[in-house]
Length: 419
Image 1 (cartoon, rainbow, N blue to C red):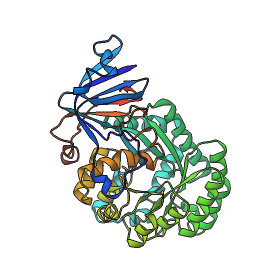
Image 2: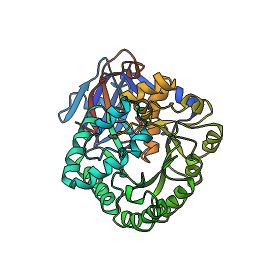
Image 3: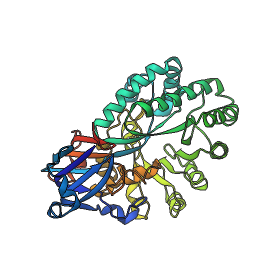
């Protein structure tokens, strides 16, 4: 299939020499081409440039050619589809009752102690069939796709038994077959301690290491391994052991870290060359120093901070220190029940004082890096996969985070096809 998009008001996040990620001051500069064209063939980007150069280019021969879909993007912008590197969108049912408890003043930890939170989702998931979970998840996948997401990482962690964790990961494998989106799977057996292990957390850690990880790896069900390293969940020492076991079985580390306190999770993540460390509400100078010079992507989840009324991660200080920053939705039923990456961009600007160029980098190329797909997604470069957003008519790209609450996406192209 061939698509020629013409008269693009601005073609955003363009690259001649593809980058792996964007760091520090570089995040405030957004490469783009005004009044542009873009040519797509066989699911990939084959050419781009200024409309002034189109008549004399190799791509001019496709104008009006049968078999080429032409899109006139006058007044509209084209950019990479969002790369959402942190979600939990395979779950059974919602948790709005806990939302009401939260409104009445209960904290996230108090709700968890009463049997809510992750343990509530685990009970529901254990009772649900794979078919039910696939059906629910596909509805959410369709939702995020139409809001502009073209790649998504999905974590397990609502099973908390070997059988149910494997069930979640098998559901994710089915989603890879059913959805056109690029999907990465992450094993998060160490998401919480099940009620039956409440007074013997070490036994549950042993179960994760000795039983879950070998079976997950043996069936090839996960790309990554993750641990919730934070106050009230898993310690730095337990995280260390779990990640080491995962590495031995070929699973690259990622970490939930420092959402509730200074947990040491960032340092453990850097130690094991984690692809990303996520949440990071509690990040100080020591944590920033650990991340500087590492290959680990700091990934911020402002939707969770917004929903739980937590302090936001210090994005401004991190970027000003020279770090890259990615942002993701954390789509889940308890602490961030939204997969809308357009809202995440707005929260980045409004609550974390990032500028529009920075949030666009954070949800495209840096998000792609945080899920290990930066070589094929996250920017507009010849040879990369054509996962793209065509916006509605908007005055500037700053309008994307500015006009929060509305859908600025007009059309979505995934793998070079209109969806």
